[in-house]
Image (cartoon, rainbow, N blue to C red; front, side, top):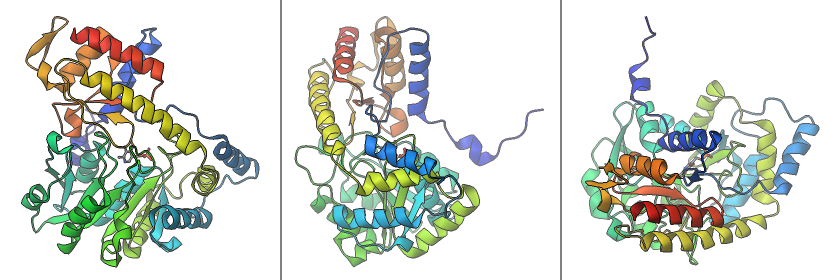
Length: 396
Ligand code: PLP
C-alpha cells in the first residue's frame, strides 16, 4: 500500500511556471521549435566579475559550512546595499541570507504565522505566495485588483479583507506576473494603512532594479521608523544579476523576526551555498555596469511585445512598469475555438497556443487571474518576434 502523504503536502500544487517550462523543454528536446515565454529567469549570463568571485572562493577552499544565517561579509554587503540603494539603515544582525528568495519567504511565513493566521495577498500574485502560506498553516486571503487600475491595490478592497486574524500582507513591487510597480506615494498610503492596524508587511522587492519609464523604486521600510518596525524587506540576486541558479536571497527586518528565521534555517538547511555567498558579495557591492545594460535590453523587448500583443484582435495588455513579464488579457477567446480546439480558460488557451503555435506562455489561473496569460520576455528579440508572429497567426 502506498505511503500516506500528509494533509498539508496534499494541498500543495506543483509550481505552474515550472510545469509549463518543462513541457516546453520536453518538446524542444524532441526537436520541436518552441518559442518559450514560460521561463521566469533572465536569459543573460551571470556577469563575469561575479563568476570570478565564485571561482576564487572555490579555489581558495571556501567550500565548507558557513554560519547558518549567512557570512558576516555578505550581511555587511547587504546592509551597505540597503543603505545606498534603498535608504534603509540595518545592522548585520537584522539580515538573514537564505537559499534564494523563495526560501527567504518561506522562512518568514513560518516565523509569522500561527495556525489559521491570515495573510493578505493581492491578486494577481506570484503563485508561490499562496502555497507557501498554506504550508506553514496560514490562510491566504486574496485581495482583488482591477486591470483598469493597472492592477494596483485600492485601500477599500484591502479594508474589506482585514479581520482580527490578519497577520501579514505580501506586497510585490515590481510585480510578477503583471509588471505593475507602485510609486512611493501609493506605497506610503497602502502600507501606512496596514501598519496602523498592526499588520506586518513582507515587501518582496526582487525586481527592484528592473524598472522602466523613469519610475523610481521605493522601499517601504525607508519611509520612517514606524514603517521599519513592521516591514520586512525581501530581495535577492537571482533576477538583477542573472543568478537564478546560485540560490541566494535575503531579508532585512526587525531583529526578533530575523533571529527566529535564522533559528529555523539552522535546523533545515544550515547556511546557504558558501561560494554563492562570496559571489553575491561581488554582485551587490562590486561593479554594477552590467545591470543597466540588461535592463535596457529588457526595456526594448517590453516595448515591442506589449505593442504586438495590443495589436492582436481581442487581446489587451497593460503596460508593465517593471520586471520582465507581459500579462495580456486573452479572455476574449474564451468560449470560442482556436485551431479547432475549444478554449474555455487560461489553461486551455495556453495548451492550444503550445500545441498549435508552438508558443509557450503560462496560464494566469495559478496567479489568481484566469483572464490572463503570462509572457516572460527574458528571451531574445528574434524569438519574441517569431513568437508574436506565430501567436498572431494562431489567433488568425
Ligand atoms: N519573488 C518573486 C516575485 C519572484 O518572481 C521570484 C522568482 O521567480 C522570487 C521571489 C524567488 O526568487 P529566487 O529565485 O531567488 O528564489
